[in-house]
Length: 618
Image (cartoon, rainbow, N blue to C red; front, side):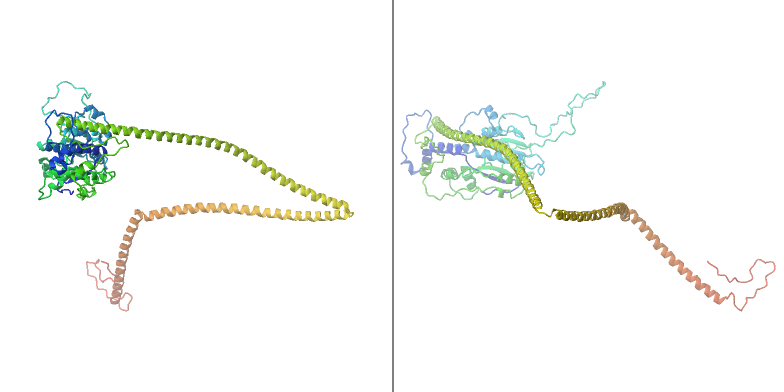
């Protein structure tokens, strides 16, 4: 099913059915088989055997139309949650004390809601630090009780708008203004310094908890201003038939805010069929009957999805405002069943409930008139029978499981005993290994001693043979002289080698002293080299620093200025030299001609009478 796009997008999350929900739906269909055939005016009703019951009807018999309407309502209730099938009082303490996981385990719609909310609550707070305000719209107040029972204790702020809250956590929405508008005169008496009021911490951490608002579709449709006081970010609809054009949603659209509407839709349910064909133009059939028949024919196609990793990706796309978030959702299209089967086959021959090993539960269609009391008794009786069979199956499988656990325990005990024996054997092996190593060492030592003694014995035998040979030989004096001569030669060689060794030792000592002296010099030169390198690094740092660059730029400027001054002085010098030469040509100082001195005027002796030949610098 496609989703409508606009300021407020609508997304459809496909929902399946658990085994418990399938069992309840099969019980409902078996009870309503006759009424549905009557309502459809099927010819198979004549071949349907009549069941005569001794139970008398206390109330008026329900018509086929009434029973069919009750079938659709009960299918919708069972698809939402099995606890909503029977109109009974739901104890508040039960919902408060029942673990949340057990409340949602029996309904795939509640499980998908829990995964959706958990993905929102555990989002990346660095990317989405602002708190999110979520509204959940349900069919009835009892459904809200189940939702609230699951959400109690979660790290969120919960507010019940429709119905009575199971447990009022007294969360205040918005900033509570406790200041008074009445002017209060200042006190006339002296006030002490003690603060009697509530202390206000300046660094109190901000509360960024998410808000969750619970309301029913009926309440919202009748009160258009129900959500006006709340800044809603996401709407989750348990009722897929909720009108997207309600005045409350229109107000959200007028503000220009993107508020996605997420509908939890059971695949191939009557609501799914109605939503699909109500959007199509020119549909002339009976939506009520066609949707029910579609569900009856295709209820075996409704399966519970095990892979739910797409929920986290979908929530991330929703929070980021991606208009293509629907691409993360699985397809939610109606099943197309091309098999040619009659309605009676779909109602009677198909067994949608899970077969148990006991096989005592035989669900047969009810073919008798029903009133409201008998109808409720039938539902209760079949549910209790199914529950008893499930308990028996549980007992049988529990017995099998206990047997397997016992065998596994015995096997583990045997393994533990084998491990203990292995440990003891290993310990003995280690103890024997120590003795074996000691024996091996003693054997090796004894073999070495035997080898040495054997060699010594051979040497003694050899010397004994030589002495015997000498004793038997008569030339003892000649051999003694020969041995003494060999001894003298060996002593001379020993003295020569000793002197050579002494000389080499003296040379070695001299070389050692030279090595030590050169090593000391090298160490000193190394220290000097390190000092020079350090000085070089400092000079390099100073050269690359700003001071040298500033001084060098100033020196360059001064050099250019002095060069210009030098050029100017040289030009002036050339000019003066040329000027002197020119004056000398016109007025030679040491020439042949002499200048005539005029007669000085009387009374003015200080006046120069002749022109000075010296140049005048101006």
